[in-house]
Image (cartoon, rainbow, N blue to C red):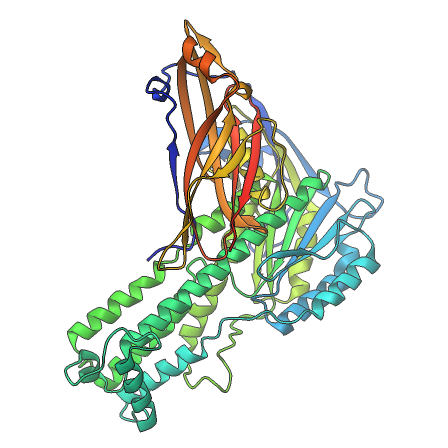
Length: 580
C-alpha cells in the first residue's frame, strides 16, 4: 500500500562525463570541544521534584559515551523577585480536528485559570495556536492577559472540525456477530448488499454467489467490503495525522523569534496515533474473536487466514518516523512537549447510530493507540503526557517543571543532531528528564529545519538557486501526482577547492514536499564533483541543473528545496507551488 507521503528520487543532470566523477579528496574541519547545556528535571517515584543534588549524583551519556560534567546549578523560581529569572515561552496548541468539544473547553478554562502562575514574571510570554488541517496563530508572544483571554474565548467558540466516524464500521462488526450468534441481518440488508455486490458498487471487490467462501462462512456478510472500508478508514486517519504533524512542525518556527529561555508546547488534542487506523483493526479483531466464540471455532481455515492477514495491515501506516522528526526538531530547539487531554476514549462512534459495543479491553487498547503519539513526543523532548488527567493537573505539572530544575553542562567533541542520544542518569533510582538548553548543532539539521519552514515563509537565497518545472504532471490511479523539477544552481556561487590542476566542489540538496502549513522531514543527498580547468572555464556564468522526481500525495501542492555549499557554507532556499 502506498504511503501518503512524498517519495523523492534524485537525478543529477550530467554536464560532462568527467563532471560526474566523485572527488577523492576529503573535506574536513577542526572540531573543538564544546559545551552542551541541559535543563534537567529530577523527580522521585511519586513525581515530586528533588532538590539538593550535586554533580556526583549525575551521569551523562552521549551516544553511549560518558561525558565530563563541567557545571551544575539548581534553579528554583519561588517568587517574582527571583534574581534574573530565566524567561519562559509557552506555546499553547489546540488541535480542533481531534479534541472533543468538552475536552477543549476544559483545557481552555484551565489555561485561563492558571495563566498567572504560568507567566509569573514580566519576561514570560504565551502564544495560542489552533490546528484544523493547517495551523492558525491566534496571538503573538504576549503577556497581556486580556489578549490571551480573548483569544481563548474565540477558540472555545470555534466550530468543531469534521471528525472521522467509525460508527459504520462498528455497525458492520455488530452485524457480523449478530449473524454468528444466529440472529442474522434483516432480509432488506441482505438484498441491499447483494445488489451492491452484483453492480460492483460501494467498494465491493467481487460478486456474491452461492460458491463464495464468505457466503459459506457467514451468509450476508461481505468481508471484502468490510476490509475495504477498514483500509479506507486507516488511510484517512493517516492523512489527517500527517497533516497534524505538518502543522506542529510549522508551529515550532514561532520559537525562532522568541528569546532564549525555557520553551514549552502545551499540546491539547484528542488523537495522535503512531499507527493510524489501528483502532478499527483492533475492533475487527475483537469482532472476529466474538465470531469464533459463537461458531465454536468452526470458522473455515481459509477465511481465518484472510482475516489474520488483514489484521496485520494495521502496521501499514506507520508514522513513527514522522512523529520522531517533529520531536527531533523540537528537541534541538530546546522545546519540551506536554500533551493534555482531560478526556480519553471519546469516540464519535459511541452514539445511538452505533450498534456494536466493544469490550473494555478493546476500548482501552483503542484509547492507547490513539494517544501513543503524544507519549512518544513527550518522552523524546523531556516533557510529559497527561492524557486522561485533568487539564488543571497537567498545567500544574508544566508549572512545576518550569519552576524547579537543574542546569547541567558537559563537554563534547560532537555536534548534536537529530540522531544524537543524550541520556542523563541520577543515583538512587531518581528519574531525570532532560531538555537541550544550548548546544552546537549539526549544520545539516539547521538547513533541514529551514527547508521545512520555507514552505510557509520564503527564506533567504544567498546562492541564488531557482526551481523550474521539467515536463508535464502525470496523475496516478491512487490520486497522487508525479512531477519533475530542476533545481538551477549558479556555478559561480559555489566555492571551489583547488587540488593540483583540478577543482572540487561539494553541496547537499534538501527536498521537502508539503503545503502552506509545512512539510515532511527533508530527504537529502550530498554530491561531490571534480572539474578540470577547461570545464570550469566553460561553466562560468552558467547553472548546474539538479533534477528531482516527485510524487505528490493528495493535498500536497508544493516542494521546498535547500542547498548547502559544503565548502563555502553558503545556502539557498527556493520553493514551487503546483496547481491542484
